[in-house]
Figure (cartoon, rainbow, N blue to C red):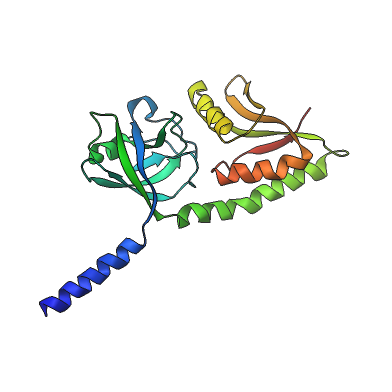
Length: 221
């Protein structure tokens, strides 16, 4: 009976492990805390340093990751809700609460292994929002008088210059060109300017792939 029980538990553990796939190993993690607490994240949520969340440059929002500190083997599960880190050589930023569980508060950084536990949430959100953006793009084109040669894509708007700068740096790292700031009385807009009509679709697709789905397309004037 003990042998059978052990075998069943072993199979359960093996099947549970199979749902996690190693994304990257021996990469650098850092954390962000008080300075950003209460600010808006890239997906529109309010950053909570006590929540189990993280920032990644490319993985879809909602993706659940298991991060393991390779030095002490401590692990934590976090959800992607922000973009970053934008420091060379770093792969992921975790919240302060997650950093505490990983035992990396004193060091500030750690070599980690990242496993993807659930990517379906992020993929599902992406699939739901794509048709909406396609319709918005068509409405802009059909409402204009005559052909449009260039378009401006407002990726996001921030009250904080620091957050706007973080997004702009990310866009540049992703290969986007003509990234500008547009200041208004109440906000700082991050805009990709003068996108040729022939490249608009690929720019929109690239933005959606990195989790930026609330952009606005306007004819360049």
